[in-house]
Image (cartoon, rainbow, N blue to C red; front, side):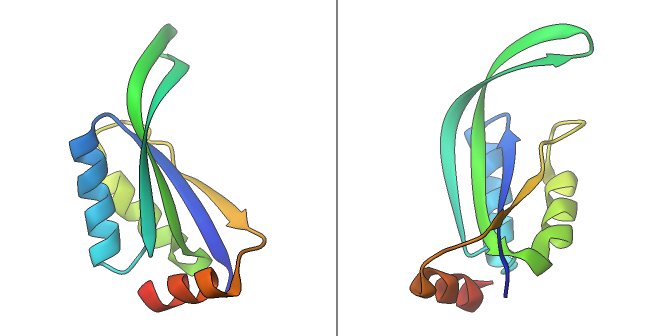
Amino acid sequence: MKLLLVQTTCASKSEAKKIAQVLIEKKLAACIQMSKIESLYMWKDEFCNDKEVLLSIKTKKENFKKIKSKIKELHSYDVPEIIGLDISDSSKDYKKFIEINC
């Protein structure tokens, strides 16, 4: 089983919690951490500096397509960040935790 860390940013804590809860309840993710961040980027030729909530989603690689679809369905952004990062190493116990919970 291959593990994946999926990241997405949300406009608010309530949106982030909603997405996280759905992913956990549907067993698409084993654990999701929420962090307040500040994002700097260009959007439609304008410089943006926004407060956002970053979701760090721990899951199985096989769940990525379903997670991507669910984030797009629930997200308020036109183009939400959805990035999958392979987890090349982890403890045996944490790998088992992910396997059992999603």
